Length: 233
Ligand code: UTP
Image (cartoon, rainbow, N blue to C red):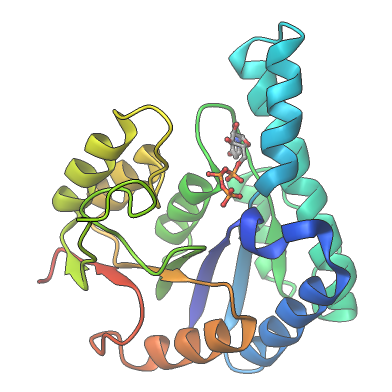
């Protein structure tokens, strides 16, 4: 089974704690004994800080995106270092390079690719392109809500939604300044276009992430963690 995992920078690189990188790498190494793995790391707080400074000095949005991409790749480099020989040593800079890297049989780790999106979109494109068995977006909240749960106490969590419903939710959250959607709108659109099944889950506990991914790959319909996005509702 091929798993494409979007691993949010806000969970992987929180405080740049080496122990956290090692715990995620241990979980990924165990998963890789049974499954092929492609991990796309996000930029987290460091990317946000760099982008804020770039904006403040007058950088345009595309330059800010390039800076964000650089940080996602730094996090990929850190995760590769923690994985040691279990990881493919190079960071693919394109979707084709990712396909080639997977033939190494090692865990492939990469970051962003092109401006105008986030690593969720990179992961969705890779899942379609490489015909992954499972696309998972691991983030710091436990699924998709009807509104931003950080700012709206009435927000309700969904267990299962269609890609069209995801787009509606994501667009309504994105419209409100300061709110943050669990899935980037470009990724949501790709999930809809390609009719992908995806799982959005809380990935803050590496051991739980490993367990859920292993189980979900075996039995997609069992819902115990996060939100399933599927057109086969
Ligand atoms: P992330 O994927 O980390 O965004 O990319 P995020 O939504 O903030 O995710 P977390 O916090 O890690 O979970 C960081 C930034 O890098 C640029 C964008 O500016 C994005 O906001 N980026 C990333 C791109 O422009 N293209 C990419 O393919 C990836």
